[in-house]
Length: 253
Ligand code: SF4
Image (cartoon, rainbow, N blue to C red):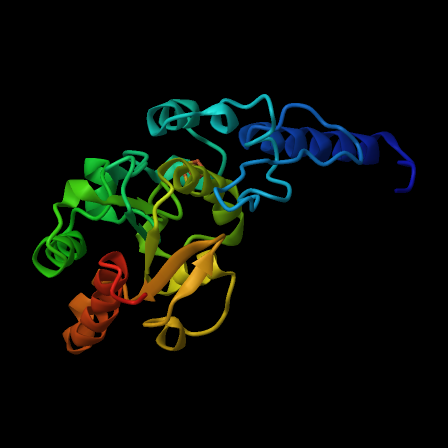
């Protein structure tokens, strides 16, 4: 970086630096350690480090989110989160709902309008369809499974979450998965599937086949909102769900 040549240039530089630090503080970073990456360390049952890499200070050793031993503690630690710009448009932060020890976890993209208003994932028309899949299709109660989204606050106009928003929020989902430790994840829709699998492969090619998310079996399928627009594809989702039922009944062994 060149040395500022006059007072105006210096003032511009100071303003830029102040804005940068304010942005850092908004995402929870209050200390800078030049050249030092803050390490994450949440280890799954199979020994794999679910949160390997750098995640700002979300899961540094001192953070409450890192230390959370229960979903309630994690929710409390997330608090009135402002780590990404989605906070500004939300009515409620939609954390997740269901059995904290569920064997089956559903993961969608993010809250829509109804979810934002009610503070619970999958409660609108698409949510009713998901509830039908769980109850009528699989024979569970909604409270038997755990339901969450990749991002916890509603993106404006239901647009896809942006990369910085996912980067800020996904550690919360990873910690949720680590606390619930489901045997199977059903990822709902292109965005959740591609985010969890870190893949650009179209969902039409990924769905219906088993994948692994850090050692947890993952079945991608279409999002219920997509099925409302394309009811002809319900039969494909039913095929995927039948594979999950078989797996849970040990019939694939
Ligand atoms: S989307 Fe996630 S990271 Fe962004 S403000 Fe909401 S809870 Fe925080």
